[in-house]
Length: 467
Image 1 (cartoon, rainbow, N blue to C red):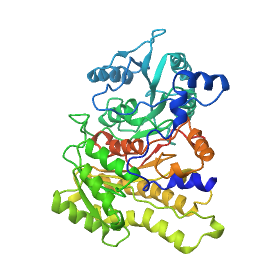
Image 2 (tube, rainbow, N blue to C red):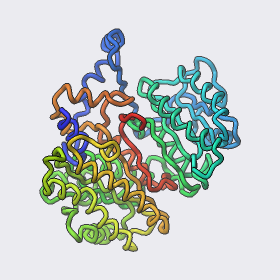
Image 3 (cartoon, one colour):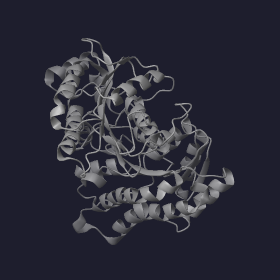
Image 4 (cartoon, rainbow, N blue to C red):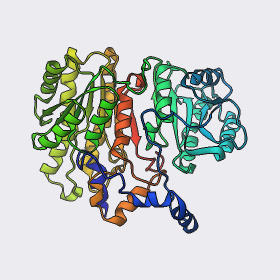
């Protein structure tokens, strides 16, 4: 059982390019009518159909309540009016809310939490299905006064516990302001819009730190990547194909990269996104140079690199051989390190570049029988943190996205009972979709994510204790 669950969660570059969206029949059954009533009477999980991004759909449905008495809360409430939102500063009983934003940017002591947090708690009863809760607070750095650090760190426990209490597809996430950021900074507004939107449907109980006030919001929110060129590895199938399609939807010119053996599905994806296909083994010493050469010839620039390609070779550590270990390390981390050195050395990649690596929750929590895979994905997270400073001179950033249980063709091969358990072990009580990962990647690729650098965004429905 454990091995099947590992393979589904870890092999993010395989499976059909368009997974069966109707695969979770239980979620559809209990989301309405007789199924909902039956699940309620039996005390069974009641996952909701999640609100995902649709072009032309409103950012949020219903009023947005901004809780907080600071000047930063006032400024944010005023700024949100530019998004044509119904912004409220005080809760009205029995008013169905689309979102609640709790601003705690001036928090100095844990004793100050009681009033605003309990006020939000009272309003949770009025939060609509697929509603959003977002906290905005400051970093609990070690050089702070102990009381201020205690108060700020308490927000972690509040937010993550609240996320586990929400129902009907609602999520709770947090934005942490760095020393150079304020509540209406471009990077903060970009992160807030991502959390409020359907793009973050499977992101729950997570924090994003906006370290600086830099950044630029797009002129058109539905095409934030217009004019940018993106290379996506492992693009022939599964999550990689979804990333290519989402980046194209958002305006990017896409270079779809995968191994020669995947030539036919790779060409199909490239045609679908009106991009170009590059057949390439990323473990080759000149892989980075070949991507740059392709970008130079076709576009004259390269702005975004998505390291999605990855493999698994699962085995208990006691039975692990060198071939299994070495191949996973070579594909999942060594290739990225080598290519990144080439990209950073090229003038083609110096205009506010973005690198996004697909990690895994296995690299955070570990997984039985996946020591090699977990090592490689933890290594990706370490690489991202250390490479962040190297991106700064070019106004760029590097971040990682860590998927949890994502519905792909591979997950459909898992025995029914095992698959059902894996689906329900998160706050949203269901598996994510490849497009959920792709939406997170697209957000981190955009200019509105400026100030977010060297971090990991989990796309897992809050599927780990304490995360």
